[in-house]
Image 1 (cartoon, rainbow over the protein chains, first blue to last red):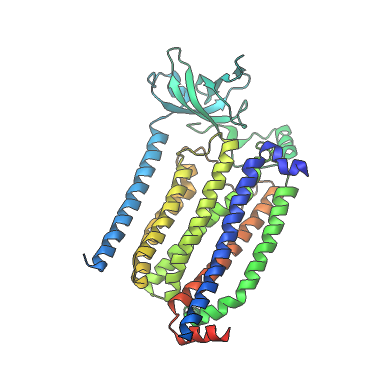
Image 2 (image 1 turned 180 degrees about the vertical axis):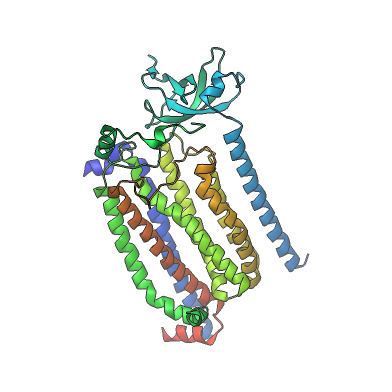
Length: 49
Length: 153
Length: 245
């Protein structure tokens, strides 16, 4: 297990590239979702006026 | 200025800046690649001036790697099969640096005809396989197609 | 077929149609990337030359492929937007630009993190690296043009034109490793008798590539739907949609 995370000494390069990719891809989904919620709320509020 | 005109101006400026920076980058990259790139054979032939920064590519000659006693300086020969030059580099070599490996170095020629390298980069090919498969390939005598240097490597 | 395309270009119909696909796309992305990551990081053997650092390939190459694929989707949508002037294709251009820029940035950053342990440097002005950086600037250009012009129909027209002009960069990226002396390794041969990669490494790579493609469709659909609601907020169907939920 330790060997797996150590990546033969290249852990910093391997894991940071995977981490950066994961963060970027997950954030894109989260942003799209929160924008949808914001938009729907905006329209809902404008309808109530 | 009317907003529409202002918009058009912004648009044209962005387009212009984008294109010119892209073109400048491209030209810069090609310049660096072409003008400053020399093969070991060209250097042996004396086509390179002293104290001028250039790049050289080739294969590290088997058995030529000599590590100095200071622990940081390495001297090795580089060949493109038609010419061989000696390089000296002070610093950490990349992991893939080994005998027979293709490398690209940047440096200057000194008075003794030795290239004092400022940067040594290892080039690797597009073949990926487990070590066992590589050993089997080697045993079967199949030469590695990409280890034969192209013109500038 | 054409009738269906025509129907799909109606924002309302597209919104309903794409909504059904979202859970499937999301599920498939997670499933495929879980398989691909496990296979690539745990099961796949180490490389004979590079050891463990080659494992960055399982995200670097799919991201690099996507950076070009998304560009072609964007430029095609730009062409459709200029010729047929459908609203959906205009939206596809602007949304692809953002997603494509993300993929290109991932390809560049993972490439740098791979270059340091193998080549010995994070960056070099190599033809492949430079043309990929220009691709990122092209995406930025499309985003900047689209957001700097207030009239979104005019903005989409201008952005589409830039995206079509920029297509010239795609073959340059692809052949950069052949045309110029490049530090970057040549293109892999995948469909051939002797692929450049051992099957034990190639299969997880292909699975990750499919995962990235499905992910792209997933995010693209989400973003298009948001843009549709935003643009059509004054229409009856959007108001009905909001009150119904």
